[in-house]
Length: 84
Image (tube, rainbow, N blue to C red):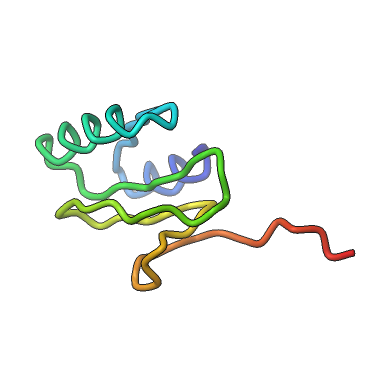
């Protein structure tokens, strides 16, 4: 998140952090609030690296550390499995 904030603040954009604690109801509440506030986009990250279902919001969404299950979504992640 520090890297995201560094890049966005260089463009004079603010970063808002919402911790859903892996709670789907909490996630939906945050998403409604962020959309209502007119944020420019959402960066989704989490504790797991498995692909997750896409978020359905009328905003740009980037998935970091874990991809969306929709291959058309923008994702920034890497394979962390050992190579041995």
